[in-house]
Amino acid sequence: MLKEFKEFAMKGNLVDIAVGFVMGAAFKEVVTAFTGGIVSPLIGLIFKADFKDLKYVITEGVANAEGVIEGEVAVMWGAFLTYVIDFIIVAFVMFMIVKGVNAMKKKEEPAPAAPAGPTQEELLAEIRDLLKK
Image (cartoon, rainbow, N blue to C red; front, side):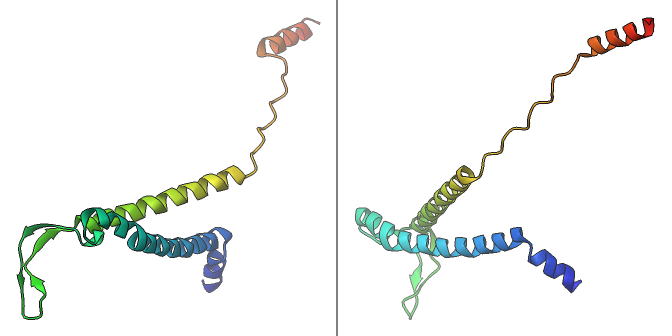
């Protein structure tokens, strides 16, 4: 069983998927840093606040002794939009990578057409003529 698992784990496709997964996770971190460090502050200039902290408060909370607000109910739309921007950037880059890989693949030549032979009627006529002899 261990030998079968080793053969399965070392197949080329599985290793490629693992490498792609690790690279994708690292790329997501880069995109998150880009969005959080560059995009969010620029958008935050418009709203005069940190973009990730923008929220719509439904119910006000009460600050406790440590200054932490308890009981607040809010829609965190700034964080949601930040994650949507992250997703769009990652999805676009992955689309471009797949498109590039597909363009680099060697285009398969179409299979040669089957040689044109006699039609069924021609074969039947030939058989008929042979039977007449």
